[in-house]
Image 1 (cartoon, rainbow, N blue to C red):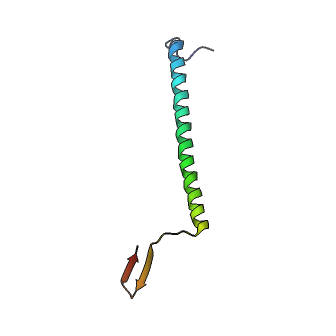
Image 2: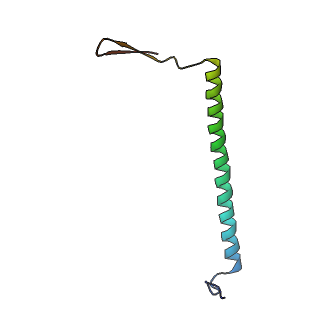
Image 3: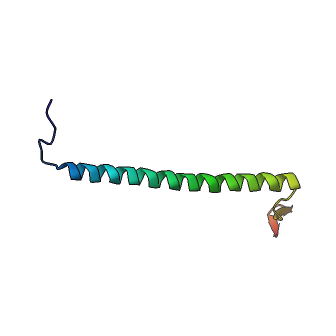
Length: 72
């Protein structure tokens, strides 16, 4: 079986391409880990807020048919 490129590429270029692909994959893993950590922290904070009983102070009071008042 012969090579697809028939010697058009040097082994150095193939090695550089492989290194570049490995670098991009490692970068993707690091970014994915950071995003997952931030998401996890927001879930933990939200869970702690619910256990303590904290909630948003935003309430909507309905008065009459068309009057909405928002208390912040």
